[in-house]
Length: 399
Image (cartoon, rainbow, N blue to C red; front, side):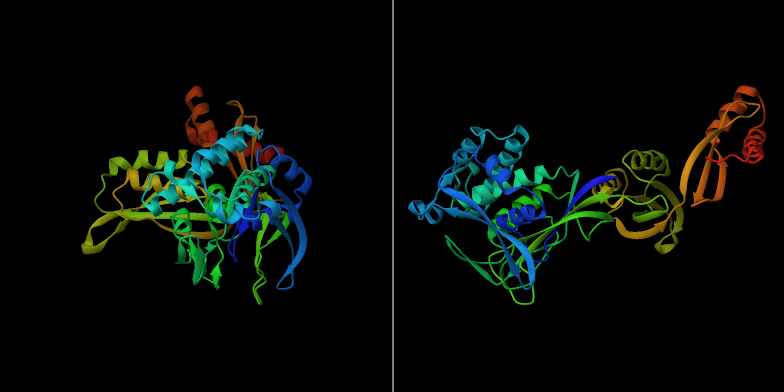
């Protein structure tokens, strides 16, 4: 089983909402302050308080700017090199430094694309302010603290309407945010900006896949509050953390990928199936079919964990002539399986046992073991197979 963190972005995401969710989930505020103190950035204080958002209890984290520097938030202009210098000269952990630097470079590339300039020439406005730097660096620190092996996110709610920015008023999502979520499932629900550039940056940099909550044994839940309290919709980012896995009999969800072709050489099919299996497919097989105009064709199917979708789709496109891959998720129930060794006259043979609870439903000798024993002894394969099955039943073998 693996540790998974799930971003529930039904009300969008922002840097302060993510920090609030992390603190609400259990990240000690003092530990976060101590880690951020390694960044050579002053003139702010990190504060947390409990609030209600549409009746839901949540944590609101604020970056309070020193009153003597109150104008800095509105007028701060930092270039990419300035921010990278802050990160590089900090006492942050090396992996945190590397992730933060990569995020700020990615943000600079998005801003440069919007303004038609080079990333090195970008001068940040809102994101160059102290509170936004703290949000991004603090978010990386907090998400590293989770020690999650995998991050998954819901589709991102960007909001609706327009948002006022330093250069004027723009449609939601803001131009840089739009570039940051390119290739990511998004939708518009609600008024105003729900997904900020910092929120988009942090979620998309960590999430490996997007969709409904995966099969998860939830351990902890954190609710991070946004500034607005919207009636009827809790303005919170929910962060769920738990162990991903299933009991031996609960197969959970399996992804089915398939594509049919009538213009592909059958000689290419065996290496295709080998690549799919090597890349993590649970099974891969071909089915003869009849296609349009009566042409014979082939249907290639791969079963896999949903997290392997992009890797396997890439193999479909690279190794076949298809122009598209269909996908759907199936629920399944599987038997617990174990291979036991049974003694036979031809040496030990592995026998695969399928059971549900205490009931054994299937017993099958391992074919390759039987094949090796038959070749070594000069006995027909079917006799070795029958001997292994009889040995299992005669001994009343229990795994």
